[in-house]
Structures are given as structure tokens and as C-alpha cells.
Length: 424
Image 1 (cartoon, helix red, strand yellow):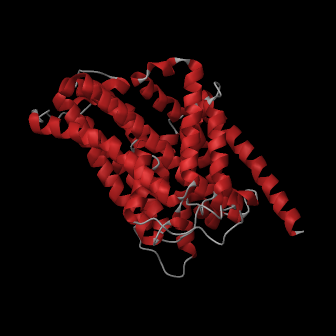
Image 2 (cartoon, helix red, strand yellow):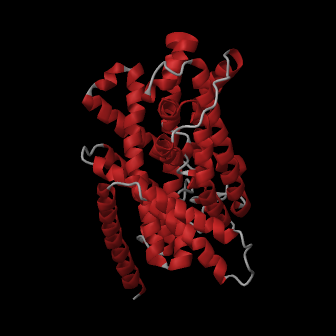
Image 3 (cartoon, one colour):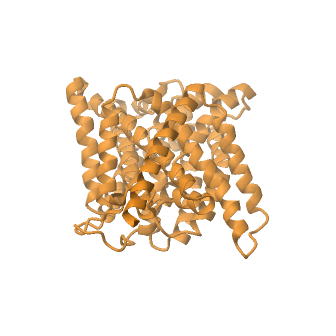
């Protein structure tokens, strides 16, 4: 297998839209209704709208930055172009650390849902084997090509969304959807507004594989803005259906399963459990598609060893980046002590958001053509909202973030020394 000149552009708008949709809709949609209803009552659906409004400036920043680049890397390219290679590397490294921890944790949750249907997976050894097998299977799908990966992602998306669409239809068409409207207390509102912000994180997944998208400078902005609006509406409809069917039927991760039990008995519980497993699985597959494209871009830039930019001559995929991502995810999934790192995973992603928000005005300032005046206020608003969300993180999260930064710094200077030695 030899390095090819470039990866083929095979993904259009609908394939691109799958990346942010599956980034935003994972396990959370099955737990969010009960959590929000318990905190703010019938104002819960509107919390999801507020969350979308809170994330909107960031989405705008990523949309505008996407119009400037058509190569792999997303936030790595943006921070690199604005602030240099070291900051660009750290932007990508922070996102990578977040993704690896997330896939390890989410795979455990997916297998837990499957264990409801197959109790044999309650055995620790079999569960560990299932986790390894699941991540390995996702990795193999990604190796076979972007087109095959997107097709698999589309099928899994349909399986996870159709039962929820059925629940929405039953809840809003056969039950009284007049669930009222009352404003929550401010303390209650603040306690869950961060949760609604987190629900939309990973909207930026479409930016990473820009080098394999058709017309990415147009496709990515359109996909970002339309999918955030669609996901916000979908979340609101699911919560309204939950309120209409059985707002007291269950709580936590079992909330929608309890509502489905009211609708269709045990068969409804099984269907929702399968949908939850597929939802998390699609989220994991989604990360397995987009994150290796980021390290591929970093390999091309020389901020990671050149081997990460290797492309399979047979499948036209960044095989080394894909295999490395899958291997690291398996290691973390079996490491019982990664909980502390998981605490910092969200914070590390916020660092990437902040750097991208700051990159937009810097890059526009360098342009000869003056950017519209309203771009700067939105970029500032995006940066401030990110800082505000990060301010709620724990001291432990910041300590782990510092450790992630130090490890990334060591990797960066190792790669740059190797690059200098190769040139010399």
C-alpha cells in the first residue's frame, strides 16, 4: 500500500449531514426528556431551543471557517492558519483526547443496552469481549472506504430514528399534547442549560472530513445550520411526546423505554432499547469516520508523524489513522481508571471551540476584503459562551486538561524533531 495524492471526494450533502446529526443524537436523547422535565417541568422542550440558540454562534463560526478550507482537519486547520502549528496541533489533540474517551465510554453504554436483550453479556469477560468486538467492527467498516462507512451510518441512523418518530407520532396525535407552559425558577434553569448545550456538542463533525466532501465550502455550512435546526426540533418533539404519554413513567436512561411500555408494552421497550443501542452505535461509528480524518490532516501538516497521512491504495482510506484510533479506543475501554480523564473530555473539546472562535476574526482581519461587521460580534459571542460553559467545570477537570496538554506537547515536539531530522 502506498500513499496516494489525495482521498477521493465521494460524499454529498446528505452524507455530510449524517455527521453532525449522529454527533448530536446519541445516548442523550433517551435520557434528556426525564432529566429536563424533572428540572423545569413543561418548559423542558423550550430548553432544547435555548440550547440551540446558545450553540448557534459557534455553529456560525464553524460554518464561516468551512468556507475558507477544503482539506481535512477542521479545527486543526483553522487554529494552525490563525495561530501557528503548535496551537493548531493542540486544537486537534484536545479534540482527539475527547473523542477517544467518548468512544470508550459510549461503547460500554451501547453494550449495556444490548445486555438488556441478551443477559449473557452481564458476564464481565463476555462484556469486555463484546466491547472489543464492537470497536473492532466499527474500525473495519471505516477501513473499507468512506462510501461504505456513510452507507452503514445512514442505515444505523434510520434504525435509531424511526422508533422515535413513531413515539412522537403516537404521543402527539393520539394523546393530548396540551402540556402547558410555565417558566422555571432561574436556579433550575441554570442547572440544566449546560446540559442542553452539551446535547449539541459534536455538531462540528462535518468539518473534519472536508477533503472527502463534494464542494465542502458550500456543503458544510449548509449541513451545519440545517441539522442544528432539525435536531433542535426533533429533541423538542420527543420531549413533547414524553410529556403527552407518560411524564412520570420513568426516569434517567429508561425514560423513553418506560413511555414506550405505556404505548406498546414489552415490545415497545425492546424496540426503544434496540434504537438506543443503534443510536449510540451510530454515534461511535460517526466518530470513527471523522476523527481519523483529523489526524490524517495533522499527518499531512507534519504535526503528527507522517505515517498518519498514509492512505490505503486498495480502499482509499487513511488506514493508519483509522487503525490507531480504533486501537487506542479499545485500550481506554478496558482501562477501569479512565473515569477522571472522561471528566476532562468535554472541557478539552471546549478548548477546541474557543480556538476556532478566536481564529475566525484573526483570519478575516488578514483578508484584503473586509468581512461583514456582524461576523466579529458573533465570533466574540461564541468565544464568551464557550468560556462561560467551561467556567462550570470542576478543578479535577482542569487538572486533567493540563495533563492532556502536557502529553500533547510532548507528542508535538517529538513529531517536529522527526520532521526536522527527515528534512536534514
